[in-house]
Length: 398
Image (tube, rainbow, N blue to C red):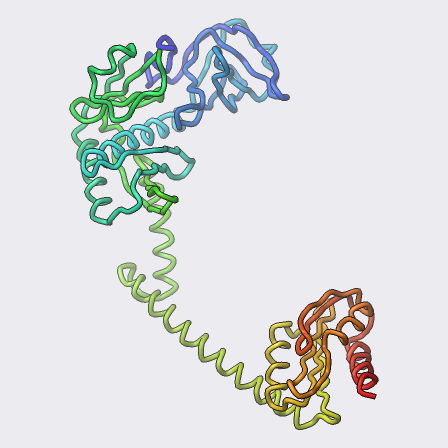
């Protein structure tokens, strides 16, 4: 393990090696080399990408005792000795983020004795889960400041291979999970950690660390952060969003939050007033329908009216007169929907009525004796369905 190119020199960008073998796994061609600078997925760090000669390296995995480079193309035509080229922007980004994770995790241990129980290096954000169920803004700020102090001090980062018997000589931040090929990543007088990932040679190469967000994860707290060039990308993205919001609100960027809060408050007030107005209109509409009804049946059809509106209107109708039955049908695109409501003194079963009309529209519905709703295909017109409902109701009254 320790002779692999990416362990000998984490800053390596290209190399030459001999082909040991080629193969295909699950339809994916791969190459095994005599040595490699391509880091395989592991330890929370994603794999490197790049090229072997002209073939694009899509994935790298360590399987048993070999590192497989999965390529886009046929590796059988490759020469015996090949040149590998690392996608350096991706590799260096991973190094910045992984090293930043070590530094931030150590800061949480040093300041608050919060240990990291898991780590994920994503394409946009890096996350660590801390073994605490609560954390304050002040603690986050102190940990972030401490991490950036270590970065700005440009401390050296050392790697060392040791045996299991030598572990007790180092103040490890957490226990190692292997018994051999134990590799320590060390920031002297700050962090000692077993790790198989790639890291820069000094903390200064991480450049900067910024905590972006936190969320509760069962009994842990997940902290999302970025390092290095990702800080600039996040800053640029947030600048674009903030500028767009500020322009839309016609306020300076520093006033955007207050202006947005005011807009949301005004919007909620408007929404509430609109809702109250709609309810008032429904009441007036219900009264009008009741005043024009005969035989204690209010029957009406509508176009493009939601089932929720029909339900509210039907309830308003029967609340106006408890001896009335409301039959409301709406034609919504290629569907028919209906609501049937019975006043408490009307003595009519809406469930029975619904069961008789649903087959006419190949529909489904539900409810209780006093109130049902249903819907189905537009196999007949809304008026025909309403007429059928009225006739069934009148027949039941004979």
